[in-house]
Image (cartoon, rainbow, N blue to C red):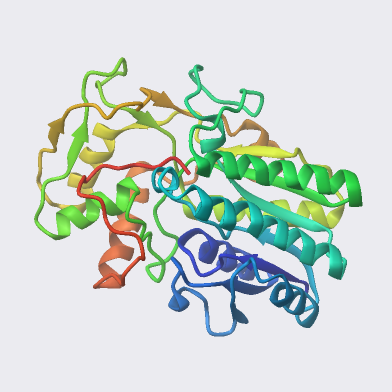
Length: 340
């Protein structure tokens, strides 16, 4: 069985990727420092190495010991808003960490990588639908660090023949199994679910945007669909099929915050009317991406309805019971969506 190393494989997204690999008969080894991931998210039968990605020696040993043929690099500091207050930490984890991963790969002779990038590379786009040709203009250290990660892959490919692709995530939601849930203190779905579980009323920031219902429109994709496309990317690299350097994993349509709130009430059975508060400075009215290229090359498609995305997140959160500490304090607002 071929083995891929998944960095950040104990996190919400990484753990879904690990399960997608195993479902398709591919082996995995997980490297995670558990700064935001959960050891319980990694199946017992999957080798687990508790280490930071900046520990290049440990990465080399892991690649050799498990005869790894490729890397899915998901690990990183993923809080765009917090990155403004912690730029050095963000660059250390996301830039120095990626250099460490690539150096270990080069030293051991592993030459395939799928990189977890972000819609934050686009900043605030001025188009209705973002494509891979939309100019990048990141507005946070997080977005900048992800763009630098893409450049590192590009330059390493020129130097060494590395084969690679980068997947730009938008808002990843839902769950593929009740064993895995999103524990981020900044994403809309877990924030609304936590508010409902605690008897608080979620709120909407602004209802006077130029959108059909006046609330912000964002692109929401199911985590299991996203995980499946990582496996497709890994298989394509292994088979020598050409891939684009970057793909958007987007819906092409988007959903408003009001639509999300209405679906939350329907699915959870908690009847609530969200409070409306003023706009947050800098929130664009709409960020939606085309997933056409990924649909062509990476088996990408939206396989889940809004209700299914909400229901899977709700079921997983309730199955989890009490949440462990997440190392990042929860903001007071109940709607703090971060585009990944």
